[in-house]
Amino acid sequence: MGAEIRDRVVSEVSKVVVGRKKETELILTCLLARGHVLLEGVPGVSKTLVANAFSKCMGLQFRRVQFTPDILPLDIIGGFIFNLKDREFEFRKGPVFTNILLADEINRAPPKVQSALLESMQEFQATVEGHTEKLPSPFMVIATQNPMEFEGVYPLPEGQLDRFMVKVSFHYPSREVEANILKRNLSSMDLNDVRTVVTAAELDAAIREVDDVTVSDDILAYLARMAEATRNEGSLVLGASPRAMVQLLHCSRAKALLDGRRYVTPDDIKTIASEVLTHRLTVDRAAALKGVSRNPEAILTAILDRVEPPR
Amino acid sequence: MVSNELILGALLAVNVVLYASLGFAALGQRRRKVEPSNLKEAFNGLELALKEAVPDLPSGFTWEEALARLRSSGVKTQAMEGALKSYEAYRYGGAPLPDLDYHEVVNVANMLGRTIPRKRGGGASFGR
Image 1 (cartoon, rainbow over the protein chains, first blue to last red):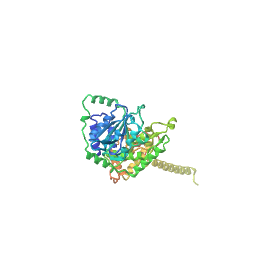
Image 2: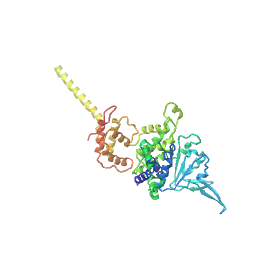
Image 3: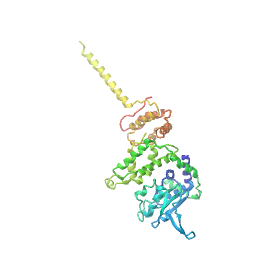
Image 4: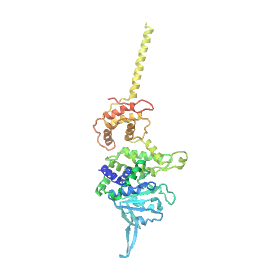
């Protein structure tokens, strides 16, 4: 069923977004693995459109919050409002109470607001003044950020970055894709043409099926060797955390299911390791000065080339 | 009395036998004759053949990466891809070892020495 869901979603999103198949698959993988996604790319590369079309074809409730420097935690989580009629305080839910929360330009909000999302992302609940409410299920944060902005932004701290299961980079499209985008914009196809192609029951079943995907002991040992290699890598000051490896494990299971398998292979892990791990690795600046690569992706690729998988 | 010619001839014969056996032993080692008896052994042999025939393949290679590399070198791997799926289900999914025809896996391993340009050494191969 996983592969069928993937094909339906990718095909439906492709109606309005050209050339973002891999990105759409990654978001779906992350949703099934109960994770959150950080979309990174310059303005105008269809980050928001992909998020919008994705939630629409999944039939999920979608809320979008534009993060700005003056936004408050209350604007996201919600808060207690005095009800004049009943003469008592009542909890008014913020936009976080949804299935998919698009946190647009998350790095424009101050750290206080960014950290207000931590509990929701980690524990799938929100607490205000001792009052805790469960979030709807499934719940996923899709945050976007522009890597080229330096003024008026608050870079996400490592702890917050670690909460995102994957970081998906949106690069400029190729010449052929660009031509197709222009051609597509000649027609009147828009978000209203995106249909819901996955029922709530199907999605719920798929999320539960991820837990049934087999992971052999050899694969677990492979993941452990990989984690150790990132921590012993001289050019990194911060390797992959245990949480990162757990998320890589869950993501690999979801990917296996979407590929129509009930077991994880080393290929599943290697294919998505870059998206799951790269944003959590911190390059040693001193090592970088000695001519070692400063690109965490290149460092991770070298590590993956060294760590022998079970065959 | 034994003539010098006879001694020389005997020494020559001993030398021929000695060097011939050494040569055959070296060749046997080089060709690493293996008789796989099941799918698992066939893939173990293919792994060894890959490591010898494609020395620049990184030690962290996966089966899919290895096959992609072979395909780019002109080796036809389609026929063994079904066998790989079954082997992976056994190796990573805990399925029972399938009683499948593994000739194609052996064929690819045998083909490696001839198809992949090598930087050093000879290719490994299977005997059947």
